[in-house]
Length: 94
Image 1 (cartoon, helix red, strand yellow):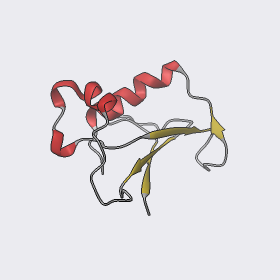
Image 2 (image 1 turned 135 degrees about the horizontal axis):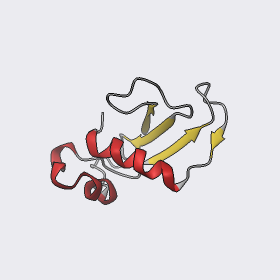
Image 3 (image 1 turned 180 degrees about the vertical axis):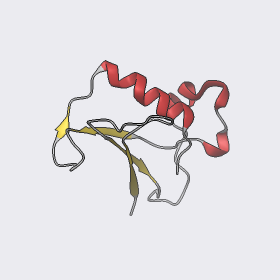
Image 4 (image 1 turned 90 degrees about the vertical axis):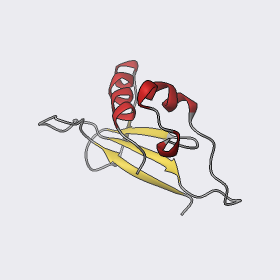
């Protein structure tokens, strides 16, 4: 499997889940066996919390679903950016 995914349906310390969960797809295996480049956007989001050994690498794709059955995609808006920024700032890759 060249990529994996992670379902993201709440932020830390939240008591309720999001109505529309996010799924984060990230690469885990390159064709040539080398490490992927560091994702600079997420590195900038992490700011002073950035640690190169625990960096997100490669192209990250985030999708938003309309419900928890993960059947239908929903549009991501600028308001979702704050939620995603919070998630990537506080979470290292699996």
